[in-house]
Structure formats: C-alpha cells, structure tokens
Image 1 (cartoon, rainbow, N blue to C red):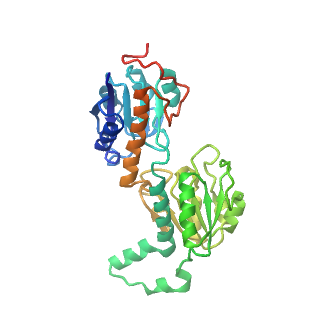
Image 2 (cartoon, rainbow, N blue to C red; image 1 turned 90 degrees about the horizontal axis):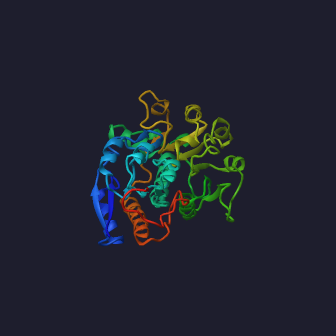
Image 3 (cartoon, rainbow, N blue to C red; image 1 turned 135 degrees about the horizontal axis):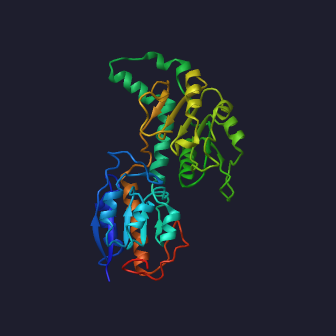
Amino acid sequence: MTTRVLAAGDHFVQNRLLVDALRREVPGAVETSELTLPWPMVPFGPVGEVDEASDVEDELIEALRGVEVCVTQMAPLTSRVLKASPDLRLFCVSRGGPVNANLAAATEAGVAVTFAPGRNAVATAEHTLAMLLAATRRIPQTHADLAGGVWRGDYYSYDNVGPELEGSTVGLVGYGAIGRRVARMLAGFGAEVLVHDPYVDVDVPGRVELDELLRRSRFVSLHARATPETTGMIGAAQIAAMPAGSVLVNCARGALLDYDALCDALDSGHLFGAAMDVFPEEPIPAKSRLLAVPNLVMTPHLAGASKETAAKAATIVAADVARYVRGEPLLHCANPEVSLSARRPSGRA
C-alpha cells in the first residue's frame, strides 16, 4: 500500500528537496503531491492560533484532501486545518521546533507532529561568528563608506577600533547544538568561553551564572530558546552589567532581548557594537529605532539559511516518514502520546 504524502515546501526548503529525500528514504512507498508556499518572499506570521506560519489555510485544506502525511516547513497546522483533514495522520515540520503546529489540537485529533532538530546548527553558528566579527571590525559601515566614495581614515583611530577575539572572554547564553559549535569555533580563535545554560545537565567548562558571565565577557552571544523563563532575560540592567565597549550578538530569538535597552546602550556608547539577526517585530517597522542607532549590524533572520540546512531539513523529515511507513517509532516526535501503531488509510474514526 502506498502512502499519500503532501510536500508543502517553499522557496527555501523546496519541494524538489522534500520529494527527492522521500524517494531516497521511502523508495516506491509514497505517492506525492505538491503545494508551494510563498515564504520567504511573503513573511511568515500568526495564522489562526499558531505562530510563524504561511497564511495558506484554505490552500492547505484543499491540498490535504485524502492525504495521510504532510511534510512542510511553514504550513499552518491549525485546529481548522485539522478538522478539515480527516485522513491526516502525520505532520512533519522541517524546522528546529514545530511552532507552526497546534500540538494540543493535533494530539486530540490523533495526528503525530515531528520536527527537525539541529538542521541549521552549523549555519547559525557560522553566521553568529560572522556577525560577531562584522560588528567588532565594523565591516558593513566601512564597506558602505567606501562604496559611497568616502575614505574614512578616522576608523583607524584608537577609539574607533574594536577588540580582538584572541585573549578575550566571550559569553554564550545557551549551550545547545548551536552554542556548542560557536564555542568550538571561538576556541580556535584563542578566546576564553563562558557559558550560561541552566537546562544543560552535563559538565560544561566555563559554566557560570548569568550575572558573572555578563560582568566578565567582552562579547556576549545569545543562543537560548524563547520560553516564558527566557523572554526578556537581557534587559537594561543586564546590558549595563556588561563591560563598557563590549559587543552583543543575537542570532537566536528576538524575545530574549529588550531592544529599547539595546538602542539606549548603542546611543550612549556603552556598547561598542551589536549584531542582530532576529527582532521583536519582523519585518522591522519603518519607524523603528533600530534603523537609526549607530554601530548596529543587522541581517533579516537568515542565520540558519544555507543550502545544507535546507537539504538536512528535508532528509530529517523524510526519515521520520520512512519510520512511519515501516511502522517504527518516530525519532523526532513532538507529541509522542499519539499512537500510530494502527495506521488507518481513511479517516480516524
């Protein structure tokens, strides 16, 4: 029996990547159809009761008719979609977390939801290091001046040059798959690495409390997940605790940081520089202070973007589809209480 699978890809994790991965992992066992979502050309946002999804509920409902499995990155698994898709049994999200899926509603409907942890760890770690260096050496600003025909010799003055990584202390807030890779890269530069992560239960060299990390670190990089406990964890008091002339990087989640406090610290010169890939509102509003403060490097939430990330994402979700087809336990299931041991090709009743 073949399994009907909808590949709801987009312009990053493309349908061709998803379909090719399914053919490798489940040769001859699936029948695929495709729906192309508009992301990233059209930004994601809240859809129904879920976050960070493409607003395609109607198109998705139509495409899911008679479909048992959906592999996607940005499709919204809302209660409305679930009610309209009685054949759906497995929803595979090719992201580090299934934020675009209503897990409670999916569990109640008997739909398993999987995700793709670690898919973008390498890309995000590399981007973090690039952002740290760009802010410290003021690469975007100096390039913009040169491109505009201006040779700024004053960039070489002592007050305008930044510190070196070698011999400096770098604090990492969060020590998951990304933070650990950043730590290894920094070790190659000869930096001392401090780590704060209360959720890691292994012995981590340089592990300290957050206040000590901030006080000692010339560079601070955020790698924590956004949770009720971590939301707003870096505010005015925490930035003030950092040494004068330090650098702050955030390639994790905008919710971790008070951006008004960041702007205040850049305006006052307390921070030498900062680099942000994530923001409290995306896209950044036209009147945001972030667009006017000095010494801020910004990229549009693309730290995890690489060709390898897209390919890994497709492979990870396809592998869980293969486990489902073979009747094996799913490896990356966000709601493991859903039992898929008795597969039903038509409906859940």
